[in-house]
Every structure is written in C-alpha cells, then in structure tokens.
Length: 343
Image 1 (cartoon, one colour):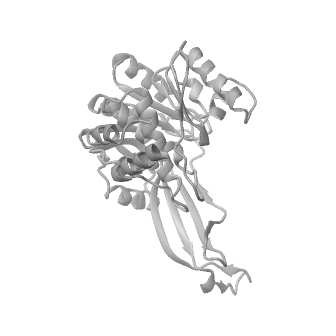
Image 2 (image 1 turned 180 degrees about the horizontal axis):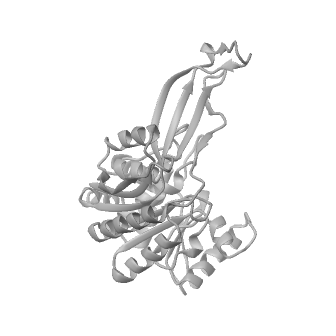
Image 3 (image 1 turned 90 degrees about the vertical axis):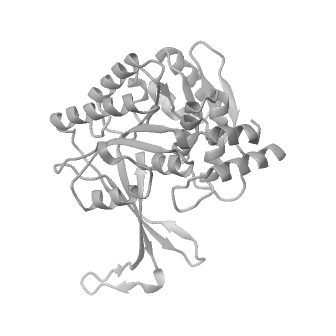
C-alpha cells in the first residue's frame, strides 16, 4: 500500500490532464418503478409499470468518462459515433455536465445510439432491484465513409492529448466503433508516438491489439489464448503471463476480489492486492473505474504498482454503490487509502 500522501500527490495532478478516449458510448437509462402505483392495463390485462423517475447516465465508454470526471481530470476528449435520435440527445445532455470536448463525437442517422434501458423496481423490503434490461444496439458495421471520418478524428485526438484510452466493449467483430481498420490505425499511431500511453480494454478482441498497454481480466486472457474458462486463479495468472509474452505488451490484468496483476513481457508478474471492503457490493463498472485510476496515475508519473494500487482504491469505492455505476472522488480515494493503511 502506498502512502496517502503519495496518493494525494498523484491525484493533485489530475486536473492538468487532457485524456482522449475511443470506443462505444452508450446511454444507460434507469427507469425507477414504484410498485405501489401499479395499474392494470385494460388492453392486455397485465400490470402497467409506473415510472416515477428517469435517470440518464453515459455508459460503456461513458462509465470511464464518469469516473475520470469524478477523479478531477481536467478535460476528456471522446471519439465515437452516435445516431441522430432522441437517445443521442439525452446522452449528449449528460455529457454537458462533464469536462467533455464534444467536437469529435460523430453522428450517423443510419445508426442507433446504443442504449441500455434498466427498469428498477423496489421489493417489499424497499430494496431496489433491476428487472430485465432492454437493449438497443447496432447490428451492422460502420459505413466505410463514416469509419474513415472516425479514423481522422482518432488521429487528431491521439496527437492532441496526454494519452488515449481504447474501450472496445462490443462482442461482435465490426459492430462497434473499434473494428479492424481502427485497430490497424491505432497500431500505426502507437508506432508514430511510442512514448505516448495507449491503454486498451477489449471484451472480446484483446488478442487482436498489437500495440499499447492491455487491460484484460483473467477470463479474457484465457479466451485470447483459445483456452477454456477456468476459475482457478493460477490458471488465469499463467494465461496473463503467456498473453503478455506472446503479444510483447504490458498488461494490467484484473483479478476480481484478489486485486490486479501487473505483467511485463519476460518478467516476473507482480500481484497488487485488492482493498478489502465489507457489506453488499455491485461489481458493474468496477473494471472501468480501475482503468480511470490506472491511466490517470500513469499519466501523472506514477509507477506501475502505484497505478495499479490507485486503480484498486477507486474500484473498492465504486463497487459499494448499489443500483448505479459508481464513481469515486479524490477525497474518497485518499480516505480509503488511509483506512487500508490502518487495517
């Protein structure tokens, strides 16, 4: 555990950062349903859920934007493609409250703005729970001219920011923003600027990235190597080491409740333990919150172990926020570090 004073020193530099981001920007729409107001539909005979509040949040790439904003990063520059629809309007409204430069957010009327609608309903004990999610997603590749325009914006953002986060959360090849052409272009940019941080998180295609710093979890490491899923931590650890050696790239591999593994090619991996928390948790978005801490720390001069520790600290706070995708402020991170040091 690094000293709270060092954590405070690193976080104090976050406001000077200008960070670029590339990936799919989703709208997370929460519908709060009051069961006491339920009505019977005359037409269907089914209960008509009564929504008393709508909460719109940026999701997917937006989860990282949320976390970087809460941590005090000065400016965020996302590159993505939205539809030209009501969901895009609501999503852009959420970004207006954040330090986001929207100049590189493209809109294509032939696509839908990806949206996860999450109905939330209270049970008899007053606890909120999520019902079946309703997904609005694109199921086709970007038009070539749109993708070419996107690539031009990726270049401009990479060259004008302190570092770039690439978030590829769509499981189907080519359906999301980060397809084969974009990956190839990112590799070219990394070769052109080898000292600039390019931090890559890809749910299904981490093995197809040939440049940058990778951030898989253990299951993604196994899948990238064509191995069956396993809950054995030693199997996952070996896979992370093998993936780093095979790709020749640095890895920050998340280990869930065990923390994080920092791996360099042909070097002994270092396991950075998690920050213990008590009570109920919600791990949705934990990886994105860890990314925010790691990237911000690296760009402020932290070493790899310090960055991984900061990522663990941020994630330990966000997982305690239930029914929403949590964030952590610098004050909360420093306080959590003090708690961890005392325990």
